[in-house]
Image 1: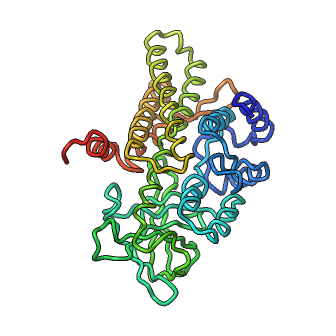
Image 2: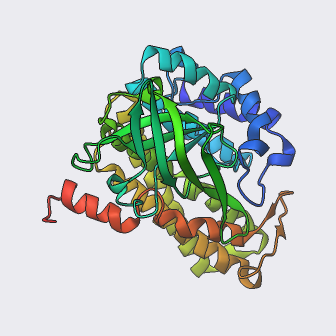
Image 3: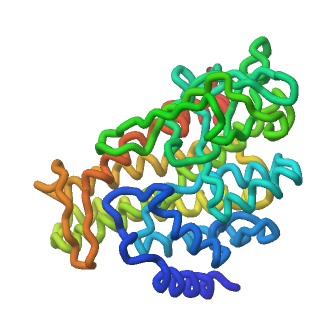
Length: 377
């Protein structure tokens, strides 16, 4: 199917099937709120746009994945991404065993398994290789102890993919392994963290003598850093998706139209420049998706995408507050003429941490300086 035919098919099906009550919500819908929609997508076979068809994915080309994301934006799908689909699935396709793929991939697609990411720790965020959560062998199991933080929607997930230290004496990148852990395992405690918007998307997770079967390790023991880097690349692709800035640009356009701001030459110039920058990022995004589609590992250049898109997201959020005028600094929800409503403050709240999580902008610049431009450390 050519790109235009796919766009029309996706547009018609989404318009007919995406629930009206889920369109343009005031904040991102969580896993529980979006589960019925996930199941409907699964019935259509449209849960995993980038996965190969043989594993239940859509097998879309990189550009068609952009098309699909754009059409989701048009119906107002503002949902926390499935980390099983966007992160763990591709990692299992590249590094998992046949048995692991058969066990976990179908349950990601069906929604039976809801995954969260156990990476960051207190003192090991941007410097992830300093993580201290340990996994000590004990018979057929590992015993896991430690803490993870800023774990998105851990309070709703029933599985976590976890980076653990399996050799405390090795160089810090060399002693790390990758485990899959059920969240109902005895010894796991989850504590929610409220964000600046007053709601909980994050949590801290504690592991106290948690017993995990050795068969739940992905890849070889002490070789998890390779997978960690691959998954960080995939995460930066996710966080560097133009969707991050394109969705609020769509809301900005609707807000500005209702407020008559396109009659203001200064506003129109600012809007147009941002719009062009966001559209330019699509070309970079497609190029990097193509690398993943070929089964290759993204290099440090993926930092360009994460850096650019998250900073554009903040610029869009700033312009939204300007456009909202007296409503921009309040908790106001503004009714729009397209039948939706919009809370400008929520976009601002979401934009602020985007240049921190997934590797801060400073870290991204350091990566590019050292690994791409070959500047001294």
